[in-house]
Image (cartoon, rainbow, N blue to C red; front, side, top):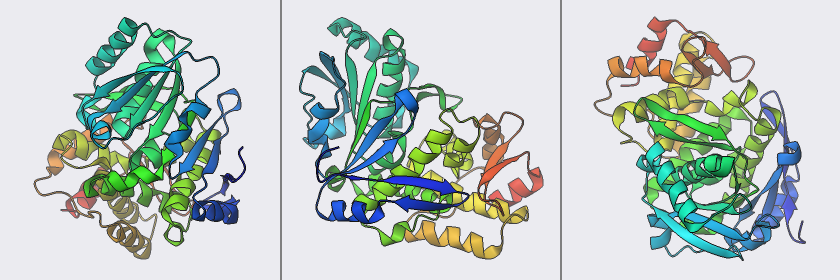
Length: 369
């Protein structure tokens, strides 16, 4: 670890975290030095760098022995003149913007481009962009030559605090979101907070929906932190959860809080909502459902609404949302193994609730109109 770099570790016990290195992290953020967040996964461990300008450290984190790098980015990143230099021979592959790029056809196209260029299993892929790019490029890296090394340069808030950390990659099917994918951990992640200033307001709002989620996963006191420290704290919370449950066999499902309704809204609405906006509505719905099932009180529901609305995010279903169409989509969620499953708040924190009363499920949804 370089001088001037703070390291942040988070240990969660129940719903409340004990954060080590917070003062050092805040000092580092104030001095524009990066914060380093470890993701502890044994031989697959890696660091997440958070701070302004960390994209310029890309050459430092390219794995040893890599001779060529395929840089996969999106049109918006190219238009914003956000450039990276991996320090080795590289070629840039530009995708379109948005969730619609996450298809099996796009994975095939990308892998064929890699093959035509001559990318080998000794080389690497670098994804530069938001969550759609990290999902697509990460999955392509996971399947090309049965897996080649991957580095993420996350340029949106959503990618920095969620999509780039934890090794989930994947694409969508007409039947649902992220139904085809793989767990493929990167070699490193660079979260450059400097480039967040280039984002349109709606893109920042999308990231804020995921940030709101962390208020309830852990008592993180995010509202007391500056942007760099807030991003690092979210990453640290996710890193701790992933380290405990890499492949979502149990505890990692807490990271899907608010996502059952969110994914249904995205699938039904043709992604008219940004992901974070859908998550925001999903958080409020999860609280209303938990209250309807007697798991939490009205004050806790009000806290959900306050946090979500405090970020300027929606707390009601979008106009024209069809409850009759949304409810069946709950069963297509990846958590639905033994029946429709929601992650819900309660006396023991957020935990899975299988097959809740369908009358309550529907009534709480109707109440969000």
